[in-house]
Image 1 (cartoon, rainbow, N blue to C red):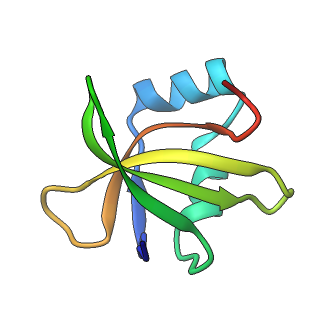
Image 2: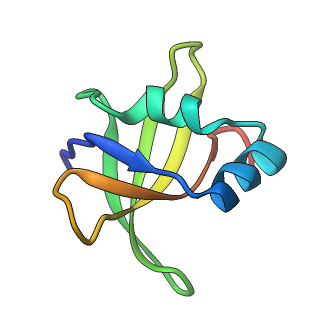
Length: 90
């Protein structure tokens, strides 16, 4: 699925979670996804969290990131980050 992400909104709680649990910053996630045409995306239906978009992208340092986004209710091409991690983490 093709997707264009112009902006990612990241709450303080999500920023804290991905930094503490997955050693990622919101900046790293944004740099890997925002404005990039080489990301892979697919719809993900989680039994608890519902429908969201899963993104697989490569960061500038070569790490593969997985991020889950939901569309903004107000703007096209703007998404809210639910969570993110590097591909090799479980």
